[in-house]
Every structure is written in C-alpha cells, then in structure tokens.
Length: 598
Ligand SMILES: Nc1ncnc2c1ncn2[C@@H]1O[C@H](COP(=O)(O)OP(=O)(O)OP(=O)(O)O)[C@@H](O)[C@H]1O
Image 1 (spheres, rainbow, N blue to C red):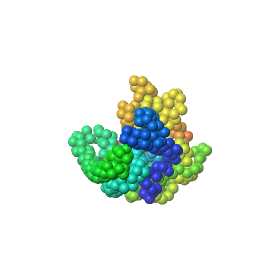
Image 2 (image 1 turned 180 degrees about the vertical axis):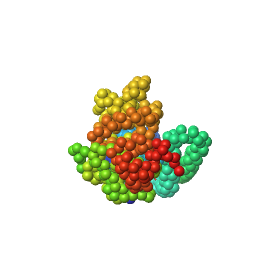
Image 3 (image 1 turned 180 degrees about the horizontal axis):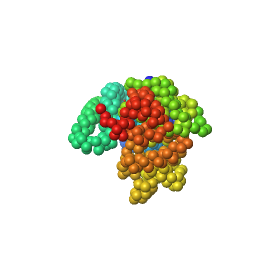
Image 4 (image 1 turned 135 degrees about the horizontal axis):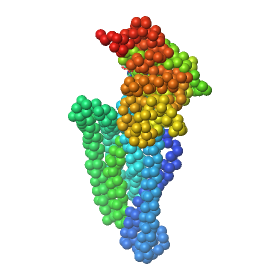
C-alpha cells in the first residue's frame, strides 16, 4: 500500500457495477426500456400494414384483413388499415417522446449524482493522493469522463437496444413467414456480430489510450494556466506551446487510430447487408412467382430485410460511443475505488486543551526517504512554540503531521495525549487554525473568505478577527471594504494581504491550536510588527506553533525547536539558544547582521 492511497478494485463489467451502484434508478431504467420497446414495436407495424394493404388490393375478400376484421369491401379494409396506421403513429410518437424524455433525464440524473459522488469522494482522499497526481487528470475524470457517460446514457443505450430489438422483432416476422427465408436473411448477422466483437476488442484499448491522453492534456494545460506568470517570466511560451502541441498530437494520433478502426466497420457490414438483401429479393421473388409466398408477405419481407439489416450499420457508431463510455466509466470507477489511508477515528474530545506531542516520529512522502527521523517534540497546552531550521529540514512536514495530512511511518502524534488516528476530524481539524504558506482564497467577498471556517459568524466577529490579524486597515481601503470581491486565488490581493486574511480566517474559528506556516513571510516589517502585537493577544490561551525563517518573528516564543535533516538539533528559548552558541546562534548572528554567512 502506497502512502498516496490504496485501491480497492471491484471486479465486473462497468455497466454491472453501475447497475449495482445506482439502484435507485433501476425502476426508471426499466420504464425507459419499456417505452423504447413500445416505440420499436410501433415502428415495425407500418411495414406490416403495407404488406396488408398490398394483400387487400391483390386478394380482396380473401385477404388477411378481411379474415381478421370480417370486412369484405377493399375500400373499407383500406380505411381500417389507415385508421390503424394513424393510431400506431400516434402511439409511436408518444412513446418516442416519453422514451427520449426518460432516457435523457436519467442520463442527466446519473451524471449529476456521479459528479457529486466523485467530487465528494475526491475531497475525502488523502492530501498525499492529491499531491501525487496532476490536478488536471482528476479534473478530466470529473468533467470529460462523466460527460462521456452522460452522452452514452442519453442516446447510446437506447440506440443499442433498438438495434437488438429490431433483430428480434423482424426475426419474429420472418420466422412466422418462411423458415428458409429467415435462415437466409439472418445469415449475415453472425458475420456482423463476430465482426463487431472483433472490432470492439480492437477499439477497447484504443479508447483507453484516448482517455489517457485526454487526462495528460488536461493535466498539462491546467498546470500551465496555474503557472502562467512563471511561463511568461522565462519567456517559455513557445516551449509550452510545443509541449501542449505534442500532447495534443498524441491525442490526435490515439483518436485517429480509434477512428481508423471504427470506420472500417461500416463497409464490412454493408457487404453483409448486400448478401442478405439480395437473397430475400431474389429467392422471395421466386417463391412469390411460384405461388409459395403471398405477394403481400413478399413485399413485407423485402421491406423487413431493409429494416433488419440497415440499422446494423449504426451499430458501429453505437459501439464507438459504447467503447468510449466504458473507457470513461472504468476511469471513474477506478477513481471511486481509491481509498483514503488516513481515515478519521471516532474519539471526540469535549474540550481540547491543545497539548501537542510527536513521539519517535518517522515520516516521509510516498515511497521516498524519511523526511522526519525519530522526531520527539512536546508542546504543552497554551504555549507558543516555534520551529526553525534550514530549508528542507522538515518544518512543514511537522505541521503536516499535526494536521494529520498524513500518518507517521513510525511513532505517534498526539493531541491532549490522544493519538490523532483515534480522533474525529471535527475534534482535530475543527479545533486547529491553520495558515499555510501558500494562501488559498476562494471566489467571493473578503468577508466570505474570513468567515470560510465559521459561515455563521456575524459581521462584528469578522471585523474583530480582521483587526486581530492586522488586516482591518487595508480592507477598509478596498473599494467595497469587506464586501470587495476577491477573484480566483485572491489575485487582486498582495501576498501579505492574503496572509493576513488567512490569519483572520484562522482566528475567527477560535481554535485551541493555531498553526502558522511562515504566516508573516510575505509582509513588510511594519505589518509584521503589527501582526506580532496581535499574535501576542490572540495566542493567549491557545497553543501556537509557528514555522519561521525570520527568527525575529519567533524570538519571544516559549520554546524554539531547531530542526536539521528531520531531527531536533537543539531546543530552548531564544536566549538559551543564543547563549548555547549552536546553529541557532549562528543563524541569529547572520540575520541580525552580526555575522556574515560563510
Ligand atoms: N509533497 C512532497 N512530496 C515529496 N517530498 C516532499 C514533499 N514536500 C516536501 N518534501 C520533501 O520533504 C523534505 C522536507 O520538506 P519540508 O517542506 O518539510 O521542509 P521545510 O523545512 O518546511 O522547508 P522550507 O523551509 O523550505 O519550507 C524536503 O526534502 C522536501 O523535498
């Protein structure tokens, strides 16, 4: 099992799995099939009526209609046939409308449910899972693959069913008429079926490749859109265009292969149809001339052969849709089969004091090397502790452990003495305020963003949190103050402003534990001083863990942990560490200008 997640593949055909998964729609599926059946039956009847009409004209009082309805006059018989025909057409039109409505609504409903289920599922997967794959490829499943399934359910299933039902119904008419003709007219069908299966197999892996290339393009494009400023800074536009071109070329190639295979299908079927049609035309004609077959029935059979075989040409198109949809369903189900590794426990602490502890923690990413090695760290409730150290020492990884974005490979992380693995998310993450290095702001107003973790907060509470985070001043200078819209990822705000909003957001929840990852790295000295003053106020009564590069921000901490290569190199108060003359003292000297780095 990799740290990125485990997969629990359910076996079985994708459609069987869907059938099992969406039990609530079974009745609607049955209804849709029923309506499709009525429509198809009504669709075949006019052909029989044509035969009956010819029969009336040729045989008069001896016709099938005369026998069935007890009407002798040809004119009257024809009027009856016209009335029946009108009724059949009305029934067919009604069934057609209702069938289309049922299938399409079903497709929309399944698409909606599946999108919600898949998105909800993705939200529940580990951070490690999210970090281990490009966002774009997850997006491709959530958008393209789910749309592909919708397209198939919308018209594909119905078309496939129509083709199969057609063979059955027309087959029944043939069988009732002449066994010889049935055998001959149906001769092409095994060729078509075997041919279809052969094509299907050839198409299957081609479509899997098409879906995979879609995911690659989506991943690349969404990553590039996110990193547009970097692309522009390095004038890498043409290089990136080239990469997208290569990925798109791959997609085109994969699609071209699939199209080549699926297009060859129709000509093959046309040849088979020609054989069946010619046989019925000639042999049926000879039978009619010999008087072994009624003229009316002969005309029915000729029409029916057309009926039987021509729709089979659309089977290629339907199979195409089917194969694409199945490739998509497999990808969706594969995503749904991903299981989170870090699942919540069931312990709920009534009140969280905020004591934190890492005991003998060994941790890392994926299958990579250990990033934290036998780390012991104890943070008593209510104290302010800082974690410092060179870049890559594992500071952010410690915070990751505290938020339980991942579990340690060895050792334990505890909150108030309880292993995090035993706690409910609400007790753990619900009681922690976290300000990340890279602040994410949502579409909405400034106030909405501050209240993100406490949607019921009053405007007064929001303003108070903003004041504590030293954000009040710049918010008031914005065009609509707290109602100013901040765009996607808060692009209208500076890095420092974003950090302060994130801080206000964390404070508003009144968390027992406040975790700040470089929360003041993007602010100027004056703002930092303002935040420091606010922090002195907001950290009272709650445990605070601060990761910082700028040591001035943490010099008043109750304890400073200096990490080096995943271990605690030294720990103590600022004064103790400076007096000790170790790596912290060196770093302090460099940062305060008392020494120059080597
Ligand atoms: N998502 C990740 N996947 C794989 N390795 C990672 C990931 N994040 C961090 N690492 C690795 O873990 C190690 C510690 O990273 P971490 O971010 O904890 O260090 P840090 O002390 O916070 O560094 P900085 O001060 O630069 O933020 C680094 O070697 C880094 O390469």
